[in-house]
Amino acid sequence: MIYDLLMRLPFSCWVLACAAAQSSGLVQYVNETPISAGAAIHIALRLSTILFLLLLGIACVLRTRPSTKASGLEPRISALAGTFLIYGIALFPRCPLTPAMEVVSTFMTLIGLTGSLIALYQLGRSFSLMAESRQLVTSGPYRFVRHPLYVGEEIAALGLFIQFASVWSALIFVMQVAFQLRRIHNEEAVLSTSFPEYHAYRRTTARLVPGIY
Image (tube, rainbow, N blue to C red):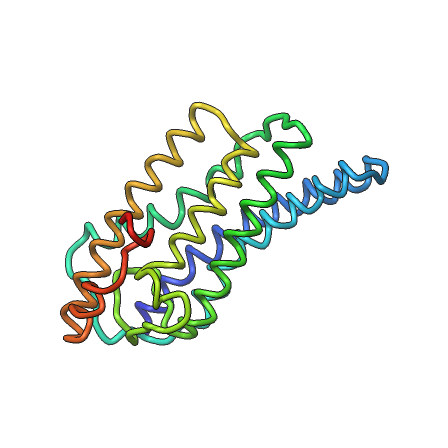
């Protein structure tokens, strides 16, 4: 019980810090910028970023205790890095975007956010930050891919990256994707151990992209 509560604390603090920084920038932008179509797109862009930053924080707070966990240090490092690294991108300076690229970034972030919300709704309190098992969910978007939450996250993360694109943020993004793939491997190992029916589910469902991977 205490361990599970402690694992929620750093994640929640990190998300709040990043969201607060973005919210402050949004307030300043609204106060200094005349109303226009371009400004409205930019405001939607920043709001979608803030919502994305808060999404997993809320799920983490509301989750139930796990029934099974991955052993060892590597699964925990992969889970933390896969989760936290992407939020670090939002701490870099924003890069100037054309209106068209702002639309693309906003669209990708909102699509990813919407997909993540649907997946989280389906998971309910079974959401896991670490490689843990709570309940096997195979309905909703989980009928088509085994990890729809990660698909939504990475689409939104790409939209987020466009706003802060640089060599260093690109390096962080690539590292985050690598840790997410390792995280997926660890989670599937735990689920295979906890739920015998997971083996049949794996054979009939794509990991991330139907018909490809």
